[in-house]
Amino acid sequence: MADVKLHIAGRVYDVNCADGEEPQLLSLAGVVDEKVRSMPGGTEIRQMLFAALMLADEAQEARGKADKAEPRSDSLRAAVALAESREAQARDDLKAALTELEALKKAEPVEAAPRPAHDRALIQIADRIEALAGKVEQIS
Image (cartoon, rainbow, N blue to C red; front, side, top):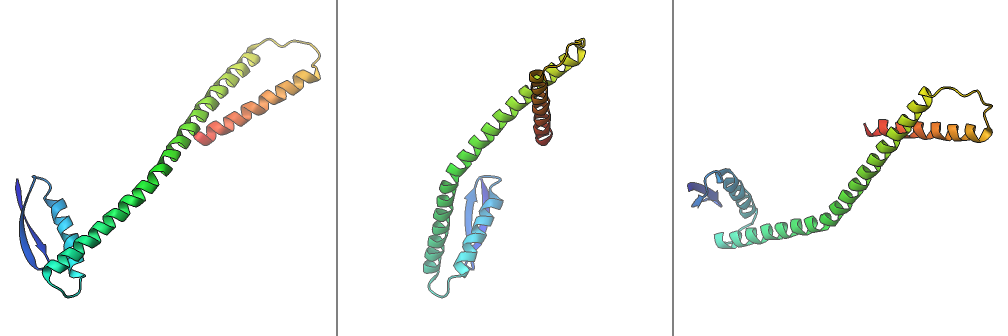
């Protein structure tokens, strides 16, 4: 156990705390002392009472803000999970498209007259590959 001397409202209070907690306790005492000193007049007990009430009010307000922020953080986590899932799917699509492209490059050319349906399909594949490559560049 550690012994700490706290200075609050011009008085010294001897307090025991666990080893290593001294800086935190001194910091908290500083906050209380600041609140007490901001109370005009009155007895020491009255100043301590009002300081305690003000600090309790601040703590309650902070808890309320934290409670309101929690659902927002849940929705943000869900959005991140969805984005990660879409990223993984885009990477898989890109790998498949690149594999298909490599296979097409290695295939022996066929001397057949191109048909418009094949041209459109190839253009669509090329457009998809370029779009996926753009997404991957944005992600990386």
